[in-house]
Amino acid sequence: MPLLNELREGDQAIIESVDGTDSIAMRLMEMGLLPEEPIEMIGRAPLGDPLEYRVSGCQISLRKVEASRVSVRLSTQ
Image (cartoon, rainbow, N blue to C red; front, side, top):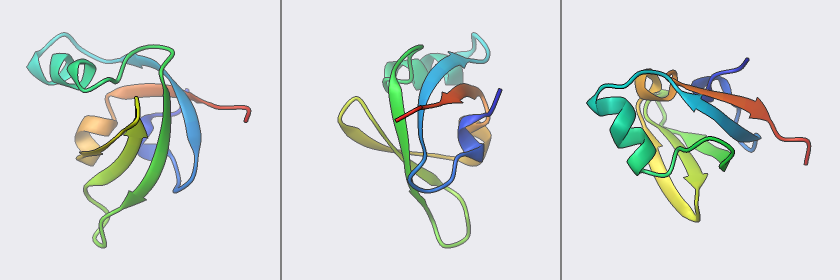
């Protein structure tokens, strides 16, 4: 199963799960990274980190290490 940090610009996916139960995992879920939620990879900073996504109508930036905790499945759209 691919991880969120592996998506390319323009890829759309569905969130499967967020790994962990610590404060970072909870914060990711508070930001809208919930199972079955659609997410789109918008772009990345010039040096590759952070990554930018669109989820729940909002744009969010995540570090690669944070995005690597989110499992996704590619959208069939």
